[in-house]
Every structure is written in structure tokens, then in C-alpha cells.
Amino acid sequence: MKKLFSLLLVVLFMGVMVFGLVGCETEEAVETPEEEVVDEEQADEEAVEEPEEETDEPEEALDAGAVLLEAAKDYFAKTATDNNIMPPADVKEMLDSNPNSIFILDIRSAEDFEAGHIPGAVHSAWAEVGNIMDRIPQNKPVVVTCYSGQTAGQTVAVLRMAGFDNVKSLQSGISLGWVEAAGLPLDETGMNAAGDLDSGSSPADEKEEIIWEAAKEFFAAVASDNNIIPGPELNDALEANPNSFYVLDIRSADDYAAGHIAGSVHSPWSEVGNLLEDLPSTRPIAVGCYSGQTAGQTIGVLRLLGFDAYSVQFGIRDGWVEKEGLPLVTE
Image (cartoon, rainbow, N blue to C red; front, side, top):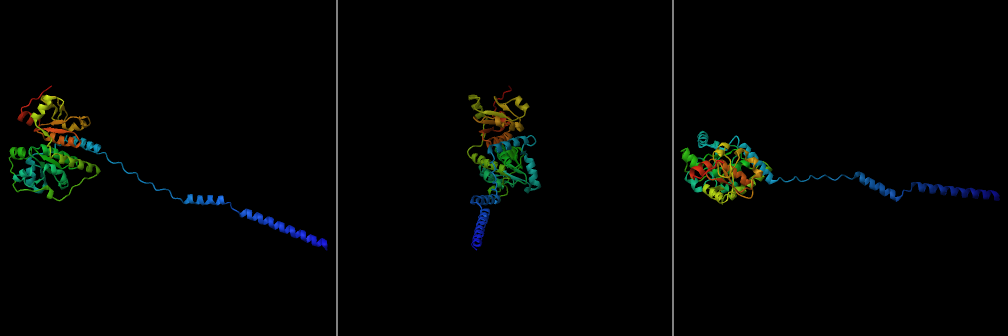
């Protein structure tokens, strides 16, 4: 009996031991280290993390000087086929055919405009043209008139660079061209201000916006200077100091060879764009042509580029020689 009871105790003890061992193994099998759980959570976060959005880099601003230089070179290249000047007879013909087919901008004084102007013309003081650029149409021919054509020439150059490819100047202006040369009548209907017209024009792109701003500065500056130098004044300055002015002659090569201002440099008008980066910025530039009109256009472009430039009054042929009797050289 004692043997049986002892045997039962042994069996019971062994069962308890086996159960304990199995329980321990089970706990160890399901136990997950805390470190591994953290790693899995981080992995999950990394898996669902969205990439950062790429931001567009701001566009680089246009260089104003480069924009103006490009427009200037293009301007002179185009003069090989068109001098941007319209004879009075052509203007009169267009007006007779259809008064609304042409826009005439008169930049003389208000008093002279009211005293007599081309029929249908509108007025703006020259220094105020920058403020009425948006009133100038771009969908029909525009003719700018002044007294002799020189300030109109400057105006035409600046407007054409600003995108007004439809603008020309009246040949020889109101006084010398329309009245004296063509003998055409003027209208005395008082004031017709360009500033009263509706706005309709604007820069086409960012480049034109830059040129419009430069144009406004140009026109504001002419309130104190017309950028024209009389022949005697230029001659005296050159006699006192041959380097006081850089003189650029834009007439034909044959006419330059036949006689030119002493010390002047020659370039065909359409090729002036090739000289722009070599022109001096430390002394004034005087430009001579035949009557002053194409020199006026040249001055408009050069001043937009920042040069201290002047046109010879009435040109080399009509001013320097015929009006002033000043000498030319051939060497």
C-alpha cells in the first residue's frame, strides 16, 4: 500500500513538472521583444510617408538692358527696307479716301496745334506721349507730326521699339513738309487731345513692358531737352576739342566719301545695330544724316539704351551745309 501511494506521488510530481515546462516554452514562444515592435511601427510609418511636393523655382527676371539691346538691333536691321517716313501726299490721299483709315498724332505745342493742324489729328505734348501710349492704336497706320520731322523721328523710333510697328513720321514735318513743300491746308478746329481718347493698347509681353517703361522715361526727359544740337554749336565744340563728341554719319558711303564732318565715323543706317556695343558711353554722340529725320530715329533708340545722344539739326546736307555753310572734309 505504501509503495502504491509513493508511486502516485512520483507520477503527480512529474506531471506538474512537465506542465510547467510546457507553459514556460509557450510564454517564451509568443513573447515579442519591445524593440522589434517599435521597429515594425517605424517601418509602417516609413512605408506610408508621402514624398514632399516639389516646388517650382521662380523664373529668372529678364535683364532690361539685354531686352532693349535686342530690340534696338532689330530696329536698325528693319530700316534696310523701310525708313519709317511717310510723304505728305500719301497722308493726304489716305485722309481723302477714308478719314478714319489713319491716326495722326501731332506733338507740337498746344498753341500751334490749335492755330492749325492736319484735319483729324489729335494732340499730345511731346513730353506727355508716354502717358498716352495706350491711346495710340495698333490696328491702323499712325503718323507722328512735328515741325521739321526730327522730334517726330525720335518718337517713331521709341514707339516702334515698344511694339507699335504701324508708326511713321510725316516727311519734313508740318512746317517744312505739309505746308512749305506740299502746300497743303491746315484745319483750325481747336483742340483734340489724345488724352481724351479711350485706352486700347498695351504691352504684348514682359519684354514690351520693359520697353514701355523705358519709353515713358524717355518722353518725360524731353521736357527739358529736345536732343538736337545746332551745327555751329557742334562745330565749335569739335574745333575746341576734336574728342568732345563722337560723330556718327549714317548717310550712304558715297555721300560720306564726298564730304563729311571732320573726325566722324561712318555706318550705313541699317547697320548701326552692329556698332551699339562699341559706342562710347563716356562722351556725347552726335548723329548726322541728310535732313535730321533718320538721325532723329537713331537718337531715340540710342537714348533708350542710355547713351547721351543728339542729332545734328536739320542734318548734314540741309543743316550743316545748306543752312549753316559749315565745312566738310574728304579725307
